[in-house]
Image (cartoon, rainbow, N blue to C red):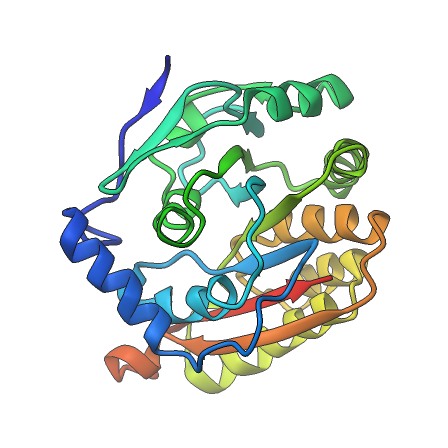
Length: 270
């Protein structure tokens, strides 16, 4: 069995089980308790270090009726590997243990589009998917997932992969689609809030093509706009009719530096 070891434990999140549990629980406790768990088709969740964006990610995870099977889309920050890299077997390890890959689901996706290619290199040092796993392991024990790392700036590729995801999910029960993304990077608070708002508005409108346009036109450094676009395409095809902004924040609210901030949002699509 192929095992992907943790790449950012001790940096993006705590590296011992006890300290990681306390950190994830602190992120959850930073949000009001949800009156009831909400079902979803897709979601956008941030991926900075848990000390910065964990409370925003937790705003989604703590209120979601989490399924036992997940497709998790992330950006390729490292530049290594295939432009649409999938792991189709094995597990990813965190301090909480091993999160198993859903081989049957991965194979079904690969059969729907040749764009998805098995490739460990794209995932080996990528943090943006790894930081989602501790939330899922704590809140949704027993889940399986398929990791997909996207790195090609092409809308038609997002369309093809989004349609493939929809085709597979439509024939199954209980599969959620997560898109890992932070928002605007390293501009001042006012600029980042304005640019974040432009991107968030298009996600809330369930408009992947307009999201793509505004990210390009307004130079929004939303690192996960490929995963988010792909998720929206799949979710709309699966009948999504609404999106809810659960939380929006910046790194400045944590470290007090409002000159160079990163934006974070959690959004549920149903």
